[in-house]
Image (cartoon, rainbow, N blue to C red; front, side, top):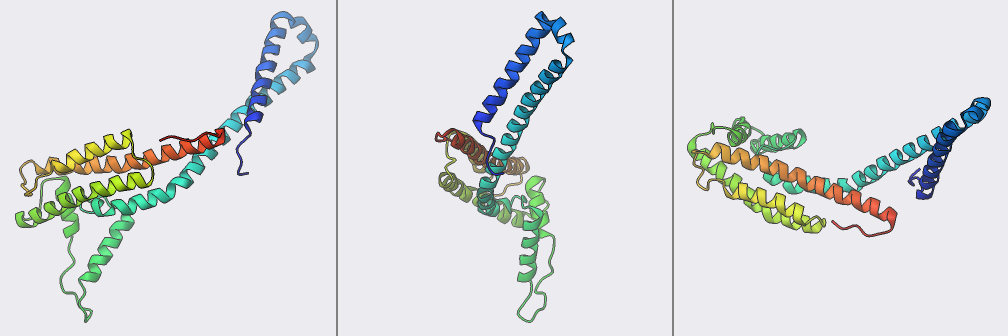
Length: 241
C-alpha cells in the first residue's frame, strides 16, 4: 500500500477511543454495580478502547515510517550528487569512503604502469602519509608537505563556490546553510598559505572536522526539507525551506 492512512480514519479512531474511554470511566464511577452485572458489556468496551487506540497508534506509526521512507527515497539522488561534488575536496583531507579510496589506489596503480606494462615507479603509501599529515604532525618532507598543504587549501577554497551553487540548485540555501557555510569558510581561510608546520596540525584537523560537519549538515538539511515537503503535500500546502 503506497497511500498513507487517511486523516479521516485517524480522526474517527481518535473520537472512538476518547468517547469509549470516557464512557467507561463514567460507568465505572457512577454505574459500577451495573457494570458488574454486565461483564459482556465491560469486555466490549475494553475491546473498543483497545481497537481504537491501538489502531490509531499503528496508523500514525505507519504514516511516520512511510513519510520518512518517501523522503529518504527523494533525498538519495541529491546525496549521490553531493558525494560526487565533494569528492575533490574530501580526497586531500583523507575523507574518502572505502570504495572511493579503492578507486584512488586503482587509478594510481594504473598511472604507475608504463606503455610496455612495467612499473615506472613503486606504488607507495604516499596518500596515507599525506592524509595522516593533515590530521596530525606532518610526517612528510618539508617540500613535499608544502606542495600538498597548498593543494589542500586550494581545493578547499575552490569547493566553496561549488557548495554555494549546489545549495541553490537543490533549494537548500538559507540561514542554516549560511551558518554552516560560514564556519567552514572560516576554517579553510585560516589554513596556512605556505604550508608552515608551526600550528598547522591543529588548523588542518579543524578544517577537516569542519568539512565533515558541513557535508553532513547539508545532507541533513536537504533531507529535513524533503520530509517537510512530503508532509506538507499531504496537507495540500506548499513547503518552505
